Image (cartoon, rainbow, N blue to C red; front, side, top):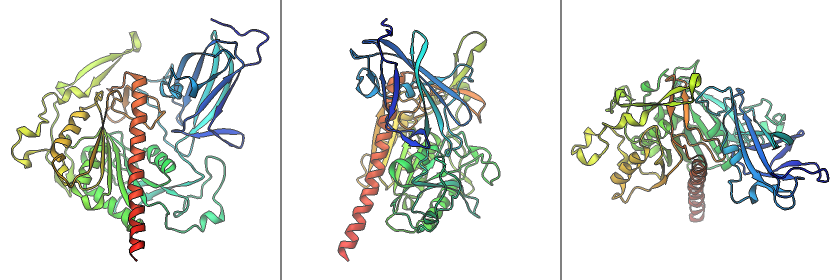
Length: 473
């Protein structure tokens, strides 16, 4: 291993593609950063340590070996033998964290701290700190949403929308008089309605980030387990009529006839998105389902009436072990619970015996993302059934993206891969897949880019329709 010699300049680390705010380097969570290290000995072997801390002080860490070039320099975007953001993507729960800890963000107005350190022979020779945000307060308002019908969510509106959030921003700036006088009509012709999975509560970071990245409006829909609200305490009590009322409320809030309403959800959120687009096709202009399911495995209701569903047999589940000795923990492989479930619609002659959403009723452009490596449930098999039902229907526009390594919990690009997660509602560890961490990180990026492109296409089609209408006038 080459070592620093005394005639080599002091090592330094610099991060590009960040914004300087009051002396702090800040960036959006899906930004591609360029990490530049200089002042090392020629061809010096070193490690780059990364430590991420969310707003609850949950910590993730990585340490990856690299080699400087012949000038003693290294640049993350020019080392083609590695992914440029892998120091973030390959972070794992840091020492002392509970098994199954997942990097998340409870308060999107607060940053995650990113600590980067260059080490040689275990000794830090250069370091820097950045702040990682899911919210762009310079351009997006965050506004809690409640109404008399019991609807619960959080709006993320472009700053030319109604500015009711007058709190201080993450960058330390406050709303200006000009902000407060902004018109109540958004320039954005796209509203993304984001739904999370079986964890419940308000998990806003994806809606916030999509609003920032796409320059659109977004709303995270609260589904259950939100204290102080009338929402059910468990996901099994969700009534799909709630989603219809939410869509109707958003159309009243944004009356522009050219505005497009796109449902976006992962896991159970994708499952509910498929159901809503099937049952209420006139209210949905687009759908993105990530590892969702058209099949119903819980006793959801529709206007109080229970819907047919598959009752899973938990005894079919299998268990594995993570860790060793006294730190070992069991996790459940929930995918095995689907062993005895007949997912092949060809074996069912009567359509009313299918405990699944009527996907042939979907009329909006749809993107279904499914991972072969999903160990939570067989999302790829679910996607194949949707394709089988809808492929012969010329009125459907459903695109499928099949991934190999992503596992179940797909994060926005450059987010850490989570292979086992502690489920706070079920109080157990669940296997997710994604053990090929580099492959999973690449798939995260593919899925995220596909989602962005899909949403941009819908927004562009709305703009073309508006221009066409004006031309006809």
